[in-house]
Amino acid sequence: MATESMIERVARSLLAADYPDDVGGEMEHLWWDRHGHTYFRYARAAIEAMREPTDEMLAAVRAAASDQIYSNGIGHADLEDGAEAEIITAMIGAASKAAP
Image (cartoon, rainbow, N blue to C red; front, side, top):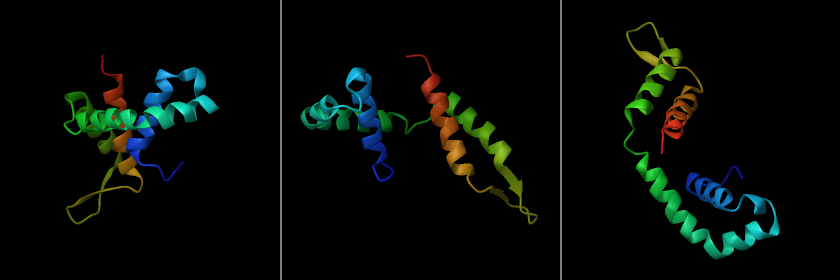
């Protein structure tokens, strides 16, 4: 599962949201084989929509980054190891909490 793309992760999550009783079973494979291409289109559209961050997403990034930035002593600020993932998680978390 670690090698799947983000688009496939989102597509499979959308499929699971539509057919929660079939997740992990034979029906999931059937739905995926028949309709996976449609869920890939939906997933691409969903990810593309996040390309332009909302004000809430930007605020979440600023908050996460302020906890992760340190001065390297020569006038530059650097992110601590692993900060990128935390910042992305904060941004997407803010996006997922927005009202539909």
